[in-house]
Structure formats: structure tokens, C-alpha cells
Amino acid sequence: MSSKTTDRIYYEYTPSQKATYLQLQYSIHKQVVQIPFYLLIDRKLDFDLLKKAVNVEIARNDSLRLRYAKRNGKNVQYFVPPYGLDNIPVIDFSGKTMEEQDAFLSKDAGTPLRYRKGEVFRVILYRTHDGRTGIYLCVFHLNMDAMAVFQFFTDLMDVYVALKNGTELPPPLGSFEKGIKSDLASLQNTAKYEKDDKFYREFFLKDGKTFYAAPYGIDRLKKARLKKKDPGLGYLNIFDPIHDKSKNLRFHLSPERTAAFVKFCEDHQMSFQALIYLGLRTHLSKINDCTDDVYFHVICNRRVTLADKRSGGCRMQALPLRTVIGKDMTFLDALAKVCRTQFAIYRHSDHPTRRIFDLVDELENRKAGSNTASMLFTCMPLSYTPPEDWKVEFGGYSTGRFSFPLYSFTVPSPVDGGLDFYFEFQTYRTSDQNITDLYNNAVKVIEAGIADPHITIGEILDRVL
Image (cartoon, rainbow, N blue to C red):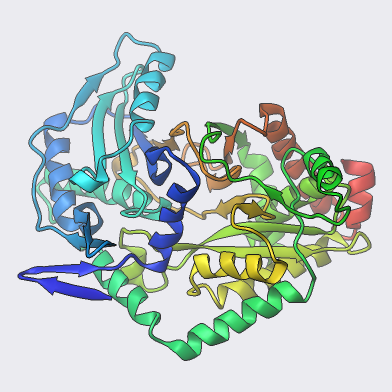
């Protein structure tokens, strides 16, 4: 709910924000709740004008003006009026190497934001080692999710062009404050809350206890079964607040191979995200005794209206995309099942993620800190046409710490129209080779299914992987 002191209105955290903030429960490192991204442009932009554009963006984008406090022992948030940054760093990497440039920005990415003291983002403008213009943003995750960061960059480019050409600014952005009010108000709809809770209770009960198909295989689970003398154990206690060191690996799929993925989905009227999920889950099944049961936390973008889609903020929720797929099912039928399951959980996307987590623990009599979800997963269909024939590149840096074992993030490449796969993973249990195998085998699965939609999952497990 909200409360007002003089002219300042305080809001509770929304369910999406609470789920994001939960990461601090599983890590002693504050940087786990910040996200560092960059935008590269193949032009030498005017840095003074770009600084001005950043300050215009702060006025336009209220998610950059969200601040945090504690009142009566509770976490609250509030908005501040528009303001300008007096000192925006400009770094010149001319004459440096890409490694030196990445090392500098990676260091900043791993430096915690002092969000309690008003530092909810850092912006760095830079000339890249190869002469392009770079814009780096490290932002507190409760202020922005990945879609909000993308909105920030695209709107900032449009503002810069308008300032350069002396034309009107782009249409106003949507309000995150309105989104906060809407999300908090929805919690008062007890009938909907109970309906959603009933759905998820039945969703998990119908297939029995969930199973942890780990990205590093089943050996650790087998050892835990022996140690606990429980041959049916299906989960591990994987959340470790100390051993959360992480890194990011990126893989690029060519435009030609990506086009085949897109065409297959269009021809069969299937979800592209479901296709990527099916590829990833089939590899995880293979390395976990060919289990039929695989469970991801899929990140759902809850922006529905045009105003929402043009707003910043943290509006995404992690939903339980669990599928039990038998080995006699064809690739096409398995994909259709994933699509149906995805559609069903999306109809209940407003239900608080933390409640879903607690519900699984309750139904399976598990302690907090245990897990059966293989990864956080999202496939974002970003679409953007840069102004004035600019060629742009989006990317991100690892904070070096992550509270969840694995996050898979797939997006179209603005460089060549291919597909970029990003994997942020904890290095304590998972190796580079584990992630490389996950990517390569996921692509193999999908391409085998495209070549023969009626091949069974069992045949893929036996002959393709």
C-alpha cells in the first residue's frame, strides 16, 4: 500500500520487486540486485549533447527517479522530482584494447550501488577502443528490469536525435508510478488471488513432486540421495550466500540458422520462446538420467498496455514453466504442450512469485533454500529500428555475483539478425563446458526437430544427443 508524508508518497515494494529483492536473502553481496548493460553506436556522438540527453531522460523516465528508505522497519520507495546530473563520466578507450575496456566496465559492474543513499544507477559515456560511442548503465534491479533498460536506451537515442536536429522530443514514456499503484491494488483482489493460488496448487500437485534437472548433471543429486538415505530425493539445497561467484558466457547463432527457427514457429504457429525452452530442457533431461520432468522459472514481461510497454520499472515476474514430456511424444507435440503450459501460467502472471516459491516448498515439505528449478529463463523478442541508419549493439556485463545457479537470456542480435544466448551462472558448481554443452545441444535438438517434426523425444535423446 502507500502512505503520504507532506508531499512525498511512500509505496511498498510490488510483488515483482519483492521477488527481485529476494536475491539478497541468498547472497551477502549487494551487487546481485543490479544489472549492468551497454549500448554501442557506430558513430562518434557529441558527448556534451549526449549528457544533455541523459538529463532529459531522467525527467522523462520516472524509474530513474525512484528512491528507497525504511519507515517503521519496513522497506518503502518514493519518487523524487526531475533533476540533472552535473558530472557524467566520459572515458576514452582510444588506443586501448577491448580487454582493457571490458576490464574497466566489468569492475564498475561488480561495484555495489549505494541504493540506500540514493545511488540507484550509474551512467558512463565512452569512446570505444575501435572508435564507436558507448553508453553504459548499471541500475538497481528494483528500478528497472531488462525490458526497462532496453526502453531506456532506445528512448535516449531518440531524445539525442531530437536534440541534435532541433525537432520535437519523442512521445512521453509511460509511468512506472502508475504501474506500482496498479500492482499494489491488484493484491487487494482476494478473489483473483485465491483463484491464482488454486491454479498453482493444482499445477504442481498433478505431476507429483518436482525434480531438479541440474545444468551440471545428476551426480550431486545422487550423492545427496546416498547421504540422506533417500533414493527418491529430487532437490538440492543450492542457495549459498557465500559461494555465489558468477560469470557470463555469450553464444551467437547465425542469421541463417535463426531464420529457420523463426520460420518453423511461424509455419506451425508456435511460440519462439517455447522452442528455445524445448531445446534447453531436452539437453537437461539427457544429462539427468533422461528425466521427463524439467522445471524452469520463466521471466514473464507483464507489460500489456501501450503505456506499460513504454514504461520503465521492474514489472517482470518469474513463473513456473514445468513440463513433463514423455519419450514417445513427438517433437511437434512436445512443443505444443510447452506452448499450452506457457499460455496457462501466463493467464496467472499477476500471482506473486514469492508466494509461488513458498507454495512449492509447502506442497513438497521442503526447507527454504532448496530448489528444483533448473534455471531462470527468458527469451525476449526485442525489436528496434535505430535512427539515421545507425548500427547498434546491445550487451551486458556480469556483476561477478549471482544468487541463482543459472540464468539463460536469449535475444535477437541487432547487429546481424541472428540470436544471442547469454548465460549467467555460478562457477562454484557449473563449468564453462557445462554451459557450452547446454547451448550446443539445445541447438542440435531444435534443428533435429525442425528437420523432422515427428521425431520423438526419445529418439532425440538416443540418436541426436
